[in-house]
Length: 397
Image (cartoon, rainbow, N blue to C red; front, side):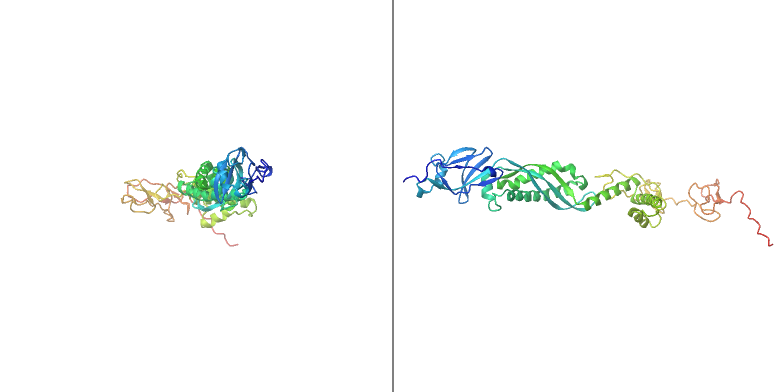
């Protein structure tokens, strides 16, 4: 039978304006015998028939002839005397495709430091590479249009987000990563995502080669709330307790408000005044030194003194030295009887006297300590040494 086509009538290759495609499909299904398939150094030519890969060609110039490439005999059109092959030819890029964008909301995560639930998002870039062209064409074709770059890269971006939802949440919860400090763990997250995504993408012949500009972000409202809580907690630890910090904020706000004509009453000022029930104008005494904090400075809920930690109102047990609340009669640690608190009262008005007081704070009488035997009454306040006499009443005119 005579040949319908003379030899070497055409070249089959990716057009210059399609070089950026991950997968390019040759539009003609009827391939002439002796045509030249030109495969670029960063490409692989894949021959498919009825949804199955029948053969591939590496980079180079190949003459399409069944006598030179045996698998082409599967596609020979016998009506043309074997001068025509009916086959699909795909050119698949084997290089990296960089600077592909991905990002979106990950999940709601509870910050292990503050206990607040916040919403996290991840954004960045990745480089995609085809590691197995045959798997890409056979397994992903039914899912997305493989000849459309955006369809492939969008699908990969979705797989990355699936991995990140699990990975980031497990790290934050399992390892106790503070939300405000997640930037320090970005390299570890990147490495995990590349490794985990390799498992997810392997069956589709794809791999994430590397990642870049990777960030884990908070919503503006969540970030502001965490930073405010971190600041207040840090200051409360430095002050000894939140009450002391609030009282300090109150006095600072009062001073600023008076300097500005009373127009600058901040939320901290009002909150402190309401929370302390009007007692915030009296600065509390300095409490015990707070212990070191985990996470960010002042981490967690702040330092709160516990009963018996050495506060001013505690009573020390003579047997085990455990601090007990003022007024306690028995030790909470060993059960020993606690000494009764000494009572110092003013002899003039009966007001309680502070230890070491020289004058009564209620009536001004002088307190003169007297040497008394053990068990006798405590010193009492004495009248001033010389009290001025009251002036005589005015005489009637």
